[in-house]
Image: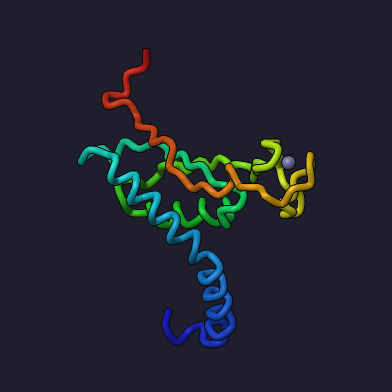
Length: 143
Ligand SMILES: [Zn+2]
């Protein structure tokens, strides 16, 4: 409705822009997820996708709600419309290289609680993987 909401347009545009900026990362991640799904689907199977499962590490820098929002927005009007995105969070885990003690760092302090060594490595929590694409039965037959 051009010319109708002149005032509110000026007030809401920067807000919308801020939200887009904030979710730019999730948006590109959602785009990647869709590309990966497309690569793994034989042609014509996209309509049958019921859900896509992803593993997202705590340290991957992803806000799950944002990712869900972006995924839903991207599949709108595509063969994948209506498919769900399930996000499995993977906690941050470290391993001490000195004493081999596995631990979950607190407050991002990567110090081994066992021996105090700072020689530690992150073993999980940074992943961002598509783990499963679930398809609906072709003929919908329920056994
Ligand atoms: Zn240690």
